Image (cartoon, rainbow, N blue to C red; front, side, top):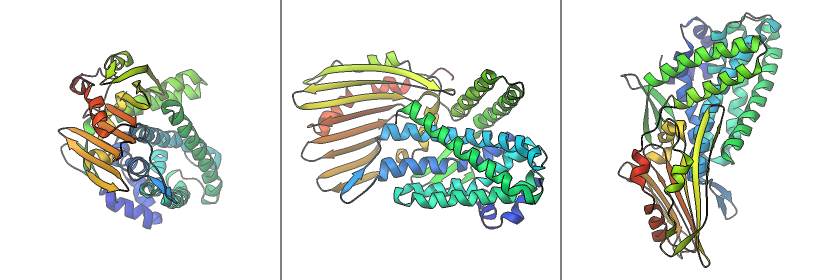
Length: 410
């Protein structure tokens, strides 16, 4: 399947394309590997770039979501969106008899996967937060695509498609709210395309360059997801909510680990890497925490240092199973050198590490973030300090040890 051509066809010729999709041979894993894993990256990565790289603002005010938080939020949103597609397909399939249709789990997944195309592609507008309303319009077009596809894929009478669509849309809105709530609970906070690179790989083309994913791991994960999906359906049919929830958690964890990663470094080990002092700055507080939800785990350690009216914060975050998604971040493949109004911002490669620095020339504020190749993030912020002091703060952490400590499989 030609990815770009299919996108054009489903968006511009949906009435002709849905019958073709209905006749195509597919599996759960092929739909994820060849379609969803690529398209779902568009809004996730574009949202990260828009909020954490480009930023938003007006009337002299600008704001960026911190890089570490933005990166973690990006990969979690990506995984949750993949899960939401599967859950909505289960709903579409379960509702089929109610609206005179024929239950067919694979057809339902096809419907949601391809029907979501406009919303996924429209996610590119998140590159500029001021244009995000256009992404909403694209989402509305996805509703129309699903409306056209229901009688073809689920074989319901066309006159019942409006009601069928309405129920699915309401469920989708609720699911979106749940995704947002989960993201908050866990975190506390150009053009895109894709192609097969051959040799069991998928390449996502973005403004910062190409990102290649190993689809052999994804295919194995998709097979496991299919088995877990059956387990979840069986548990739901028996009214066993606990078993269904457990299967959902395992499914999310499987998707998170499909691109690499593993168990996060124990929070206590991260805490041990934070120094007692940084030059003349003494540590005033330190904490370590770990946790997770729906099969996704992470760990972090934070320390605060002071010297009179000067302060430095030093954070280490390990995204665990989500770490394999880190290179989807556009800033990991880009460079930047910007100076304006006494503020300097740079993004550059330091070997296999990606470094971002932002600071004011007057030494009033500075930030520095290092993304290690295994997805671990080290971030420092300072008030009334210069960038050199933050470089020393980052240098006080054993980055080589962080980057080379092997992870246990998730």
